[in-house]
Amino acid sequence: MRTHPSTVSYRLIMREELDQLAERIRQLTLLTQQLRQENKDLRLQNHILEQKITVAGTRVQSILERLPAVDTAATATALNGGA
Image 1 (tube, rainbow, N blue to C red):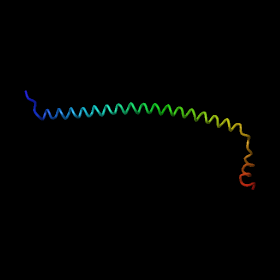
Image 2: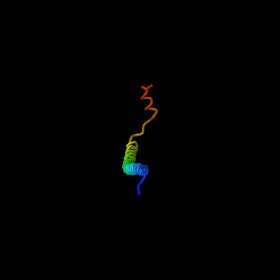
Image 3: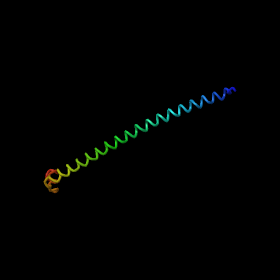
Image 4: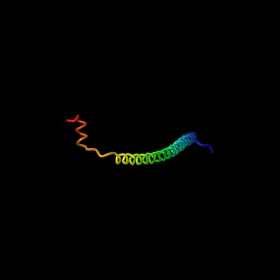
């Protein structure tokens, strides 16, 4: 039994389209894995930066607490040239 030429052509076209689809799915899978890893890395970096900000805030607060109290009226007068 002989297959009609249009059937062979249709099968080849369908096979090519399926192969292209499989390749696109493979690429999408790789991209998804890369993005997940990048997201994980960025979340870790964000966590580290949040910790650094907290430490810096604590240090600034400690420094501010050790500064002598300032008379705001006297400071304003001094900044305005004593007027």
